[in-house]
Length: 473
Image (tube, rainbow, N blue to C red):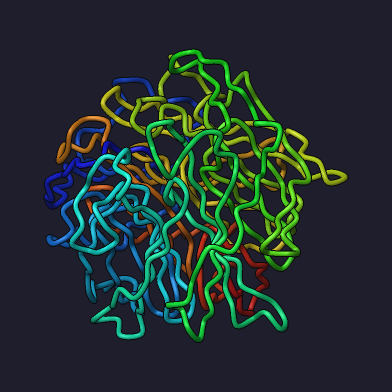
C-alpha cells in the first residue's frame, strides 16, 4: 500500500454510532443509501466484535501489517511497532511500543527476532533518523532487526541496507544443516534514475541471510533477477485502466514445506521454486492486462494447489468498491496450479458498495485452518474484513463480514483495515487509525479451525495445518 511519506494522522478513539447485526448475508450489492454512518459497525450475524484496542499514543502514524508468535501479536506502524499480549484475546492489552519511524514497518517474527521493512528514505538507519529525499546518496532504507526476547523492552540490534529499500519482506527458514539460518526475501519496486541505490531496471529481489546465533552478522547474500526479459512493460494508461509495468515485486509469499513461493510483482504473478533459498527460480508467470492493475499479494491454499492473488487498484488510496469500478477490478483472482502452471478460475470482490470517501481494495489476509476446505479471511481497507470460502475456486463465496462506516477520524481515503489474520481461534484486524480489532467467527463451516493451534504466524511464510495439531509458520 502506498501512503505519502511524512503524513501523520491524528489518533482518536472510535466512537461507534451504532451496531447493526445482519441476520443473513445479502447477495445484492449495497446501494449508496445502505452505506453505514461514520463509525457505525455492520456485520454478518456469525461474526462477533470481541475488542478494539486503540492505537498507542506514542505511535502517531498508521498501523500496518501484523505477525504472531506464542501469546503475542506484533503490529507494525509507520512510526515503529507495538507488542500486544493476546493470551486472553477478549482482554488483549498493549505490552510495549517502540518508536522507530520509517514506513511501512511491515513486520515478521522468528525466535527472538523481529524484522521491520523500511521503504522510506531516511537520513540514516537509526530510530532517530529523519525523512529525506532518496536522491540523496547518503539516504538509507532496508531492513531493521530487533531483539524481542524482552517483550517490555524490545531492542534495535541491526540494519541491512537493500536496493530500493524494503517495501515488504518474507521469511524463509533454513532447513537441515542450514536450520540455524533464516533468509529474508526483500521486495521493493519503482526505481528511479535519480535514486543512487535504486536504478532502473529493477527486476530483482534482495535476499538477506541471518545467522540465528549471531543476527548482527546479517547481510545480503544474493540479488537474483526474476525478470531477465524485463517483465510486463505495462500500458501507460491512467487510473483506473492502467496495467502496471513490472519493476520489482510488491509481495512474496513462501511455502517452505513445499519449496514453493508466489510473487505478486506489479504487472504479473509468478510461481517460484525455492528449494535453494538463495537461488529462487521462476517456474510460471501469469498476466491479466484486462482487469489487474497492480499484483499486490498472494496466498496459497493449504495443499499448495491454488493461489489467491490480489489487485491493489489505485494503490489503496482510491474508492474502488463502487458501481463504477465494478466487480472484477481491485479484486481477488483465483488460480489453480495445474501441471506447474497458473490457471485462472474466477474473481471475487466484496459486494457491498462503499462511499466515495472510503479507500477500499483487496488487501492482506490468511487462511482459516479448516481441514478439507479453502477459507480465507481478508482485509479490504474501509471495505472492512471479509471471510471467503474458495474451496470451489471457480465460485468463491463470502460467508462472513465486518466493517465500519466511513472513518471520520482521518482524512478521506485514508482508513480501514490493512490486514486481517486468523490466529488460534480469533481474527485480528489492523486498522490504520482505530487500532487493533479482535473478532470471533461462529460458523459451522469454520468450527473445526478451533482445533488447530499455531506457534507462530507470519502470513507471508505459510505452513500446513492439521486439526487437533500444531501449525508451524
